[in-house]
Length: 135
Image 1 (spheres, helix red, strand yellow):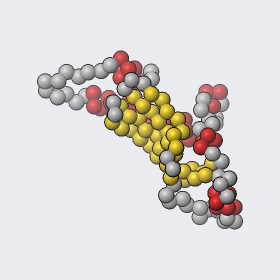
Image 2 (cartoon, rainbow, N blue to C red):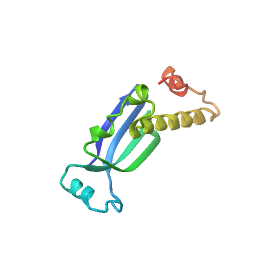
Image 3 (cartoon, one colour):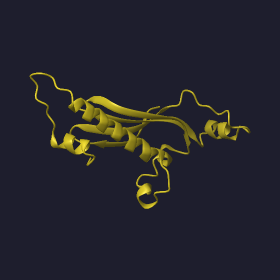
């Protein structure tokens, strides 16, 4: 099971969130077995959320959150935009996307500082906007 939860694409960047199989589900906290029963009946699903940023075909940042249990994958991402109107509400989805984009910016800024003799550094407007946090 690998399901696309969300994706955003530009000329040079792809930001995605996918649901991967949860290979090591810990239900030790499920004292009465009701959660396991809901999972077995298909009323709930368990997955590992994976966010990543790909720059020109190369993954430059990623983040994982395991042990996700929801009624559906859509329920996991239903908080899109909720922090704007309700900043007290948390969202694993929004936090993971924000964090992976921040890590990608750090990666690109670090790579931008590396100079290879004979090669001029190149940065498109999209790259500069991403580095400055405008994309």
